[in-house]
Length: 571
Image (cartoon, rainbow, N blue to C red; front, side, top):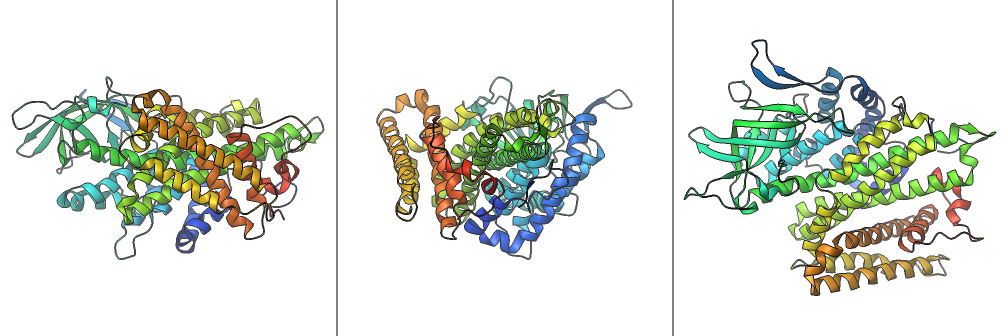
């Protein structure tokens, strides 16, 4: 991307993968097998996402969102959800291209899940209302593959991983009106009958209401006919949309949610009216199975936030490079340059943090001892990427100005849609509680985190090789020591965890993001390119040190604005 206008005026019509130099370099460095084996597939996916998918997203959002058709011709209640054909076609096209099924393909070496997460990242640039159901389908498939009884896995997994245009999509039904994030408060009943299990209750927030197979939490009575309170009393059940004879299962949508964003995605309140279900896991492990699905979705939430953040950055950069005001294009104004550099910096930090979680997922499949690091870095990534995604999407509206606030421009939809990333699969407070379980209790998450950041510090070059690195290293080391002191205090005073958990989450996620950017910078310095170092240095000073003074010492990334923004080498 060289020349005076390295960014098109708007994103639609571009290949979202081929233009993503940052993602290419990350995958080449951390997951070279993905680029070697699936670079062409991802390129095709990026071209589709940047054209057909993005066109559909605008059409569905503005003109043809899903509708509830509550009654049939005889006046009987059905609760049928109706989608426009473009949405349905694009939804199936994502599966046909492998967004869920690739790791389960028969007759070939199993593909890393990183490929599917990269596809989720690309999907979210264009349509989070497609990315969300793809996420849940992947989550249910993962649970079927790893935790379901063999007969259940063999019966249902192929229906979710096929790539022939007839994939059954997934849902996760855990939220109830009185419980919210407290899944252990589930009151939906499960009753065993001769032909299987039957579920009765109300699920209050079921995204992808047209799913073919959904996981649901429910509470069966124990062998004495008593209820077991809390999460230990929950089973996990697989609920098909249709019975074996082709008739609809016994549940229906009460109404569709009227949401701020993700209007293309049908989210419903569901009445379970003796719905047929297959037991995935009985109490006391049912909640653990559902949480495995939600943890998978949290990784997708992180890559999706990073993808939306990049779209916001691209729309802002495109506008700045093509819009003229007061006789000059916006990109020549220093305040605009600062905004773009900050958005790009946060986008690269989000991508690094999200894909650290992705790679931890693949590593944990090979070595279960990595489970603690996976859960920890996923909590950090889910929190920080969502926070920065919302900030970036708001700034993209501001950058474009009045047009950016109208529905004719993609920034308005981006801003509405980005809000879901902060609440999807657990808001910040829930991620803070997850973090506390891993670092301030019996788990060794504190040691794992400090070792990961410490390894980055030990690999940094000296001041002679890279002027300015000593300051950055000192700031990162100071942040790590602040983390160490906080972790030590909370391990010794666990009752203080709920008060300080959110602050700890922010401190550790900022520190981890800075470490990952510096790690990337070291790798690119070995190739003679200082560009990533300028980005990492800016992040370390502005985010970790909270230093952005007004004075003569300009940030060096500002002096190299054109090269940094265009991903051109900096000597």
